[in-house]
Image 1 (tube, rainbow, N blue to C red):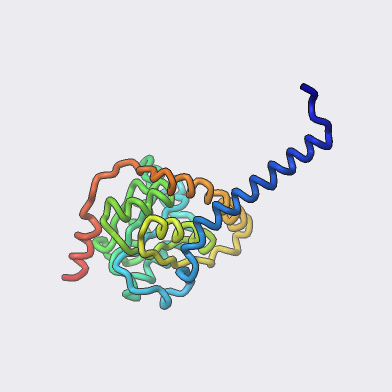
Image 2: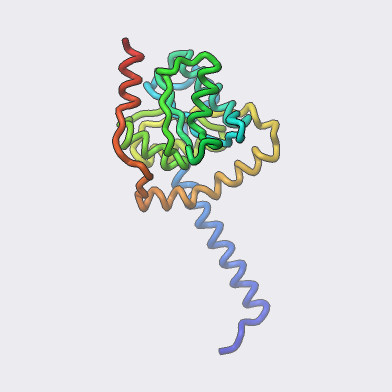
Length: 224
């Protein structure tokens, strides 16, 4: 069988690229479209919802949250103080003592004056999909306010809504001045829509899936 000539090879490469971009665009649209009209950067615009879910991000070996994570936690605290939510779930990876996102998130919030009984740690929120599934199936929630950077929220809120959650998003834009990580994070988030589609279609089950009353207990305490 003869080898394709240079022109034919170029056509194949270009055709594959076009198909790949079309597939990426379809994944982005599928994940992000359900989030339309449900994202804000203003605390006062967030519908009153019992639980806010702060998604994890980088924690330094010292246990100090990164600037991106601190910005999310500050927004979470504002949600709580304004009465828009009653309890905060801090969801992230707790893979090792020196990189325990939920523990670091709790410590930061408590140091900022948030009562400990208003915080619930979710140590198995290994990614956005896991955090949303666990909110629904482990903690028994049907509505949440997701807190993250604004570029992340279309995927996060869209994922949550595809999972049946009545989800809204509160987005941080205060760290846009960190241009390189903001841009790279924005690009990565578009690519992550491919994995999100796979997770949603396959209904992948997160690790450590047993039910927990931690959130309902915290909400009960908040009402006393």
